[in-house]
Image 1 (cartoon, helix red, strand yellow):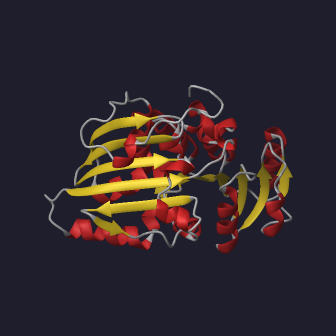
Image 2 (cartoon, one colour; image 1 turned 90 degrees about the vertical axis):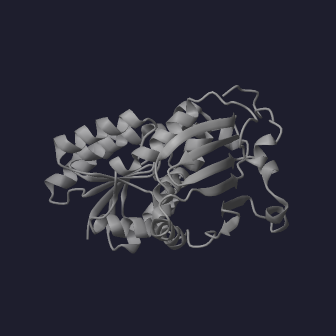
Image 3 (tube, rainbow, N blue to C red; image 1 turned 135 degrees about the vertical axis):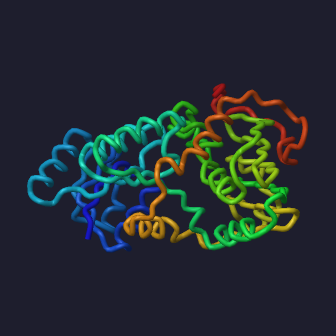
Length: 323
């Protein structure tokens, strides 16, 4: 049984981590969040100490070490721009770190984290859960077993509706979230490069506060993608089922089915990490480089091989901001 601490327990993704800690037979000793709406703890670890101030959280964790109950793992579920700092904290506390994606916002941040790993002798692991999805692992094996010179045509569409609250939160601030490509797409870019190989060309056609569309040429794939948080982009098939999220990947015109099997992937990630097989900081580098390049690219407009949904009219920012 390992001792865990979690930073960012009041957020959207934290329950998946709490569930994973519990289902892998470990215990949560301390939790920290600036927000105190953390009643979710009662469903998993009601005895965990909770703090709304970093200093008191740190003091408690230090006292635990003195009592022979040192924290073994620090889980980081904070806003994207804080992942770097909170991962460093965990390492310097003397723990290994499990950080929600994206590990960091910029590729050079990985270099800094690896230096702290070397200094402390502890490791950072990140959540790249789509690599553990059975359908994705099967697709990767199919590509690896196929012709090495074959280049596949891939279309990725991912629409996950968000309300106006999104723009008032840190997620709507590109400096803090990294924008739509980073916030909702980083694990898809990781999956695609894991399956089809590294990036050769990265072109952005359209980018705004609520969508990003572009083209990636990978070693074995030509990828057109469209990512959106705008419910107006949902196709009829999703609306008929009253669904606010739509995922679709086509490989050479054939639909790749992976809509099921998402619920337990964080637990599987923890099982791998605890067994010594987690995804390291260096393994996140490709997808972090991709989203960094997308964020800093100059969109070229509707030229070349673009995703059909890229032609959707741009809607104004709900608060009138240019972000």
